[in-house]
Image 1 (cartoon, helix red, strand yellow):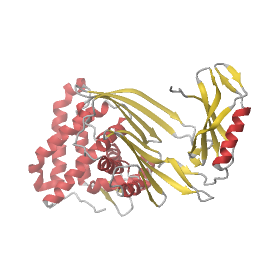
Image 2 (image 1 turned 135 degrees about the horizontal axis):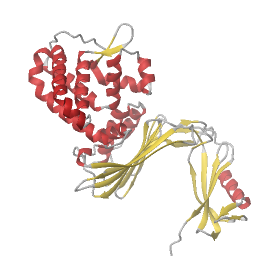
Image 3 (image 1 turned 90 degrees about the vertical axis):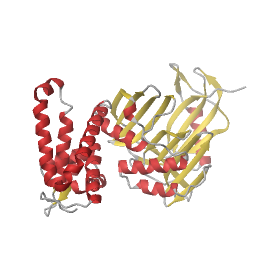
Image 4 (image 1 turned 135 degrees about the vertical axis):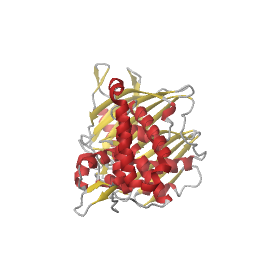
Length: 443
């Protein structure tokens, strides 16, 4: 990364525009703001920043590249702010001061404003020299916009930075057009791998559009987005393409810019092979893409797959990315590719053997229904459904081949239960889960 000194710089117009673009895009991203604040305190090595931020090395590399000439690397391997980075920090401080308590602002706002303006002016004069005068209006307008974004961000809650960035940069919902209310925020450890899971729900209201949005993050990484359109479609900051395939491509590209996960590049290559919207599959390496169309609903399901020991392909759906569009509006997006791993490809139990295991287990089991123990269950007919859905085993994120079989029952029990679902690990034949189900018959 080139070093940027503090003397007068001679920049051509295109380079100057690039510097300004980097400055203001950095101010809008929470991770890059934190990097700038950290380096404003002292120079840091790459691994020191990884540890402090709690991100992967690939994510930090992506953000450092995005910061461009705001950051420079010294001969000893440490990173520090360039003159442009110092100017950006000054602009950040100016915006943040506008958010201080009203009482305090009454006493010191005039002197604070003068001091901040002088500081920004001195640093920018040193960094931009002959170009500052022509760009004062740009800086002022951008500062005003950033102050507005800070206010908007506060409505997303304590951990709203990731949410706000996803909404504006991935889904492109025009958040500034809504009144945003956080309706719930829960954090807990999952049963698989002790992963920290946070779910946050929001209500967005305006005079023309009311929507609810639910988010899930796992270990700080985006995991799920779900949109409930209460009244009309969302308000978008930009015009969305009418073609749902192009819409999916655009969202996938913006999600890559948001997360920086390398597997999204392979997913985009697969999507580029789809030209016509219909029910189809596409394959490349160990990545599969299933496109399912039903009326106005379109599902794009990317997933990892691998051949079992007997040559049969196993689709690890949980290690994948799903997008659901309803009338060309993204209503569900879920990413588990970053989290789950492949624990086994052993398919020791065939589908026929799994069906026999399930039927035998149900006939001998005892189940609590409405506070009473019930036994002597009898199944009828062929299985209602049989699915291969690899599943974690124990406290792990490693996926193991897993049969899930639904069987009809000869009797309808209290609560309307007339079916049973049985989960069986395909590498061992061990029954893992059993649940009674209720299905209403139509006449």
